[in-house]
Image (tube, rainbow, N blue to C red; front, side, top):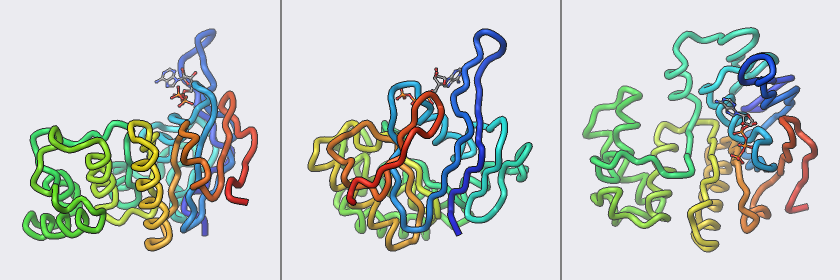
Length: 231
Ligand SMILES: Nc1ncnc2c1ncn2[C@@H]1O[C@H](COP(=O)(O)OP(=O)(O)OP(=O)(O)O)[C@@H](O)[C@H]1O
């Protein structure tokens, strides 16, 4: 079973003359353990596609299934989209989006408490996760004092905190040098492998293209081609 399944997904913005068809007839499957890149020129629909899969933007047409559950078909199939996101999806933004007034551990622990875990247990799990991502020694640091690579690893820990089966990342390595970019990609590959998660990453970053199992090339809101960089 594919964890992400899109059939004929479309999304437009605006009305009349000003209408933009950001996505048209998108068919995409991402399987457990797969790390898929999404690339294309500016305005080709990459962020729109990621936000549709994240259930942040509502599509106009098609069918979307996430881990086997139909979540959109002519309308949302779930009332509580926040709960749906919390259960299934980890989102890593380009800018790490950590809360500036919480230290690294508590940024991760907060995400864990949202799934109903008590604070002490959430902090314990957060600390273990930060250790696992090799940023444990920065656990009590505030975000402003973290380097770009450290902050991105804390943000990844937060995205992984509730063991999502689908991990979405919008240019996660854009602010990192090539060495740190590769570390982030290795982490995502490891999570895909160990947790049998589906990972979908928007990227312009040529230095990591070879780290994807599959690269989906978008143009004008359509999938133009797919390539297998490693093959
Ligand atoms: N909220 C919005 N309102 C109106 N138009 C939008 C909105 N979001 C995106 N668009 C338009 O939809 C198209 C696709 O945008 P999108 O941001 O998905 O592209 P992208 O490939 O991610 O681009 P970039 O690489 O520049 O981030 C563009 O023409 C954009 O202007």
